[in-house]
Image (cartoon, rainbow, N blue to C red; front, side, top):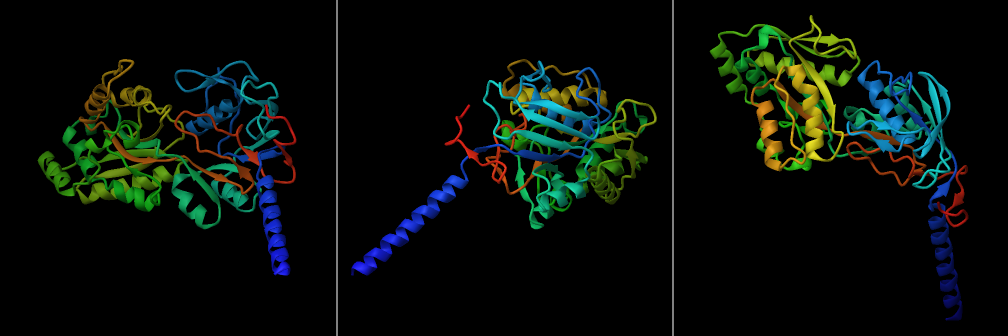
Amino acid sequence: MKRRLYLSLVAISLLLIVAVRARTARRPAYGGTLQMEIGAVVNSLDPTLGSANPQEAEAKAEIDSLIYEHRNPDGTFAGMSGSGPFHISAWDSGKHATLAANDDYPGGRPFIDSIDIQMGRSVRERLLDLQVNNADFAEIPAEQARQAAIDGVRISASRPDRLLALVFLAGRAGTQDQRLRQALSESIDRPAIVNFILQKEGEPAGSLLPQWSNGTAYLFSTAADPVAAKALVAQIGGSPAFVLGYDSGDPFEESVAERIAVNAHAAGLAVNVQALPTGSSAGSSGLPEARLIRLAMPSPQPRASLQSFLTTIVPMAGLDAVQLPDPASPDQIYTAERNVLDGYRVVPLVWYPQVFGLSTRVRDWQSPGPGDALPLADVWLDGPDSNVSLSEKESP
């Protein structure tokens, strides 16, 4: 009896030791360098200089969010250098940057000591480095998230907060007939784009705001109606051929453009696809009749995001300027969306999330919401170079 009791006490003690050690090993710790890889090439963080393409502009904004504390109304970051959780300690234009923790950051010193940013890394390079833990953090195209997870990459996805839409450009004579634009919209199989191109990492879009944002997306249809599309083409008496452009450096846009052309052909529409130089102006002469465009919500607030979208797409489509009241009621937001979409000059296609790949040592990561800074100031690294826990070092 005593021997069994002794063995039971020993077993319980061992279990307690294991539990304490496991809990201690996972305490937030200071130290270490987070290895970050991005696909874009950022040539300058100077806010007075423009970006060569949307990819550079987005990457620049993400880096800015780590070194500047103040956000402008348009979603960009500004402020005095060092006002954010990190500051630049090394900069090799277009290739590499190192951000060091800001000890005087009002929100508290970040857990990690620094962030090492490698630029110009291809998707394949990022995925391989994540698989072998040579990278701690990298953004992954939404359409590759499912396969990346199968390959063992740790994946984190935001809510669908990015819109891919088709815009019929202003001043193109071949697409002036609304019936043609409507026929194209009716022909597009949006669920197929989500299921086969996005690999189910997204949802069909019929509106300019997602359902989770303002709750009215269900009032806009996302279903294809090839019969109605064919009837509209018959009314026109034959469809003139027109060109749909996409970003030449964007495989996702290329796949979607080709899918739209197939759907359009089945409805009797003649649509050809054309690769456009990355960053080409939507208003330049000689460009196609329509093009694909990506829009990222700058805020979780419906009014702010819709106004941002309208500021971009209204001039492209040649529509009258729209200025939403501030604040705007749900009815005013819905009416503005409906007025813009009813003419089929803007055709929402799919909503998709931001997808991030993380190494196994990154702890306490939370996917950012629309317009949020990358929350890298809040993560810590579980490894031998970050072994000073909060119990051993005073919390900021």
